Length: 204
Ligand code: VGL
Ligand code: ZN
Image 1 (tube, helix red, strand yellow):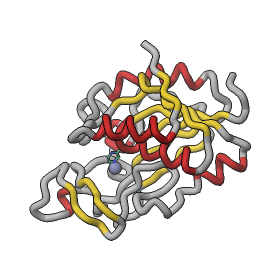
Image 2 (cartoon, rainbow, N blue to C red):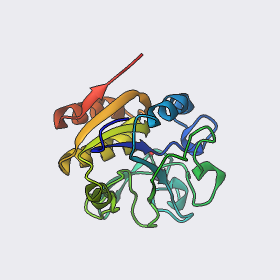
Image 3 (spheres, rainbow, N blue to C red):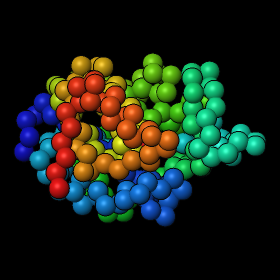
């Protein structure tokens, strides 16, 4: 069991981000057994769930003529337009059936406001609307986070970078994450996380 000041944060291990899903991440399902095994080492576990209403502004099909994976300007900045994914209550939004959800004390849903996306588990994409996770972790005396999940270059990276900014010590288990890798996004995200001081752990 890890120290009581450390939490495991499992980002978006949902059907739509696994092979066969609407926004499939290559090998997304491969990380499930390793994440389940890792849970045994933690007394504080948080799962996040990407959770979008049907009219969500991050869906390309809600922008007539826009292609999936194109970029648009939102009031809060640039936003990738994604294929419709993780619609509230859908099978695609459910956790991968192999993920052990029982040990989690918190399941945090994000991205439920139609006008704004939320990659990070801490802040929506305006980088200031809080999800409440920071306060939840602080109230439990958590100072160190071990982050795993999907996708390395979007929700995992945004969560890790926000966590560092908030003063947490952050460790990324690279082998328990998989990336979308859109136009070099993985390389950029890895560089940003390394610059920010995220501790990279990669095990064969
Ligand atoms: C994610 C794109 C859109 C993620 C979520 O979980 O990384 N990526 N929504
Ligand atoms: Zn999403």
